[in-house]
Picture: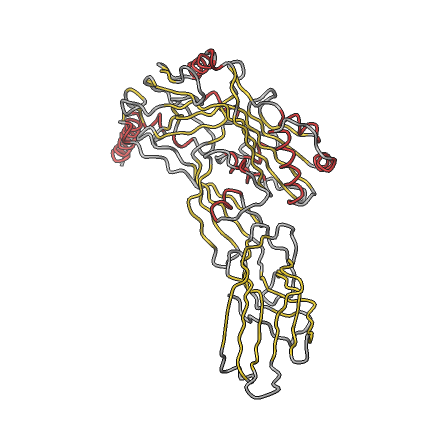
Length: 528
């Protein structure tokens, strides 16, 4: 028995030694598999992120060209839910925002573990890095150079030398901003392009691993992402096919292909979270006008309503670069709001900005690293119906009469059309106005001599004013009819008009209805 135990002990020791040898055995970099990044799940309700609107063609009349900030987010595909009241958007990012405490790890050629990127827990790998060729994006006499020993200090030295050239004393930066809605702070991960714990960041614990999700405490939540892009420094794909000399071990890499920083954007960036009791439409308009005035016109003059809204709002800002301290700060009122977003606009050798975004590539094949998002967008049930109010019937001569009504598009939360609701602003309701004229002799409607059908109008309506019904047309002539016969062979005729709803996303259809007179039928009786 003792011999058997001794044998098994020796076997375990040999296995352990073999494992350690395997972990420390040098491997060719092309043998390491790519780390399969987990999908970052984000849930929203009754609103849609801007990039999702672009994917499905939802336009925003209040948006401007300034909303397109970067290549950070790319929508891959989307999928409608079976109940028609939800949608899942699949997206990916090829840039990540660089947190202040991680900037020392980010420079062209910086080698990191592949499984440390999406969660912003960068783990550097020590290796012999080959010389790299880099270039900057701003115009100058010399924009290309070689960094023989890639490091943070060598990168800073190269950037400083390029900016100190006579032609590059001062440069204008690219200024842009975008506004989006949110209800919980973990949704801001879309703005970061990573799985950073944004709830912890915005509530004063930047190094915390806490998973607590902070919901907004006021009626509306907006976040503004504003970016001053000074320049990018990009690294050429290594001419030798590999960034490093020699081999790496599984202990060094974690068993996966390392990644390296291939492109670094310098500048200033802020993500401002605003909570207010104003409606989304009201607050969006105020914030957009304020940013346009301060950011582009360099004017700090705001309306009294804007001052009132900003003074009553709860605001936090996450800053990178600029004159102030990087990190999260509280914004107290409209004057503090102006202060945080008014600085900047140019850069120079003395103020080049800080690394704000980084694009990574895999060491094995130099392909870009993609961070994947799954965004579940749900909405409250919406049943839409064409309704006619203020119905009336008029005789306009001895043998003809007409029916009129005010046409509305109304919204309900139940299939019976009894409980009014306010649909989400991003839902696009498709409608058309149909017209029919037909005639016969002697009111013999089964044998028509003429029958004309036309679409007079069609379009899309978005509920931007948050109403439970929308007026389509006042005093619409629903029907004109001449069916009185004075003599044999007399021509009789009828013309009808009516709205129809067509199928769309996030809503279901109810049959048209005359509200004031339930016994009166309408045309068309069905939706299109």
